[in-house]
Image (cartoon, rainbow, N blue to C red; front, side, top):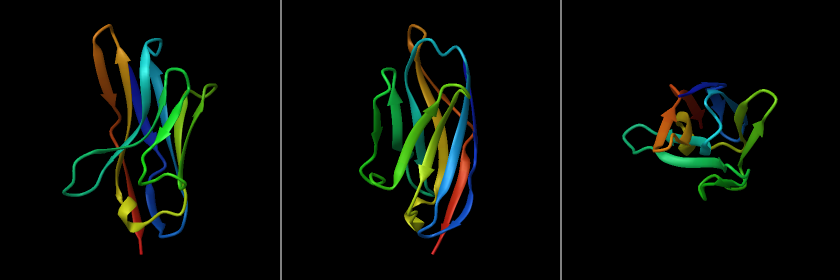
Length: 118
């Protein structure tokens, strides 16, 4: 199993920055990818950014140029630096890990609220 614990959410003004962190632990040898999704009120959960097992990163078009995903192997964390935030970025942000065990399982953190005020 894999455990994921997010931190760093909160209230930020439009145009500001916020950094989310996700502590990852457990059986990590067969990770396919890990990263972040978000879910705004009344909307479906959507992809934000990820790292693949070969350390290739991808971010959604909606946040490209503003959000940066990174990994700290020493701390076993995956982080999301959010810059130039907009009210439309308001959502609960979830860290996830997709693992081959050997069947594919997706693990989720509990989520952290990000609110952007205009």
